[in-house]
Amino acid sequence: MSSKPKTKRPASSDDWIAQAHVLTEALPFMQRYDRKTVVIKYGGHAMGDAELASQFARDVVLLKQSGVNPVIVHGGGPQIASMLARLNIKSRFAGGLRVTDAETIEVVEMVLAGAINKQIVTALNQAGGRAVGLSGKDGDLIVASKTRARKSAAQSNVEKAVNLGFVGTPKKINTDILDTMLRSDIIPVIAPIATSEKGQTLNVNADVAAGALAGALKAERLLMLTDVKGVLDAKGKIIPRLSQARARTLIRNGTAKDGMIPKLETATAAVKNGVAATVILDGRVPHAILLELFTELGAGTLIE
Image (cartoon, rainbow, N blue to C red; front, side, top):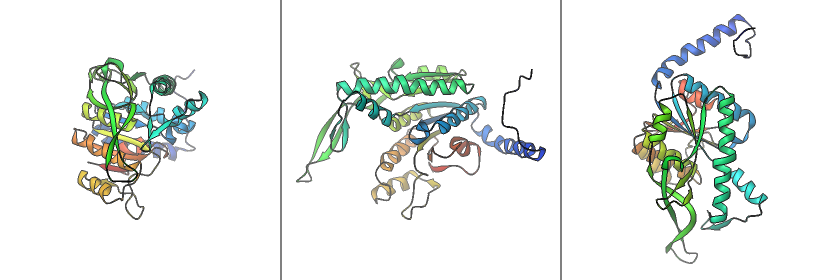
């Protein structure tokens, strides 16, 4: 019996040659990222689609086999909302932001650090990797403080603080446990649940958590998988490359809107804190992370 893994066979010898050519073309890019750390924020449609999720797992294992050190940080907003609805826990909002009370944070931790985290770990292991699930509470990986948002009063321009409950902003990243894992064949999968200095459980936005971890690890790349092609200009065309200054300009002049604003803020902060570059890319594109890292084409907007 053959011990070779089962793969889809090319139709002819020409297809085999084309496949070999693709591998040789990828070699310089593999060498560029050899033994480098790449933090991947995983969420959105890419995580909810079964086929894309399976492809993602295989691609991450391929990165590890190629000498790259991937670190996965995942979200889970839709799954949390679904579980809250099933438990008949109503969400409360302040200034347009969800308030995470004591009852809600228990559900958030259960969904993120439990079900979702282990689903991703299982998918990576089934793809041939050796994944281990963590939350930011393990080894005090992410120590955070409560987030205080601000909103304007309805009848004036006066701002006031908004208590969002058990929502956190990273203040300290302890990378010891990750450093040990990255020296091995383990792929860390991290749920963005943090602890405060007083031991409170806090929910951290997955983009923000990924940016903080990437900065602390001095990652070569932070890849932020989204449900859009990348950063768009005023005409709706993708911008392949951005400086930190231009990214801030897009925010100030209103070209960057809604959910893209915090992503750009996270991207520029990560680069400022030591990440070589951040890429905002479309996680709905098959093999998006391989296209970005191992081809000249790329797959989104690079901020450096």
